[in-house]
Length: 88
Image (cartoon, rainbow, N blue to C red):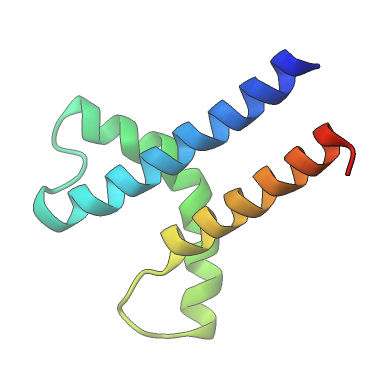
């Protein structure tokens, strides 16, 4: 059980880091030009696109809040996993 919990938390942490890296790179470097930025797009876009679509219907502004929403959802999921694992 420890291994599954640690693997799930580690995977969620890696996804969070990928989303942060993508957001930072998007300010300075066009994404998708090389294989590393394309890898970031491939990892994060399936998570960000649906949230971006919902947010754009609610708030029709040119600022993309989807990374923030996904990171908050990941943190919530991590806290649920921790509570389930610790049994409290």
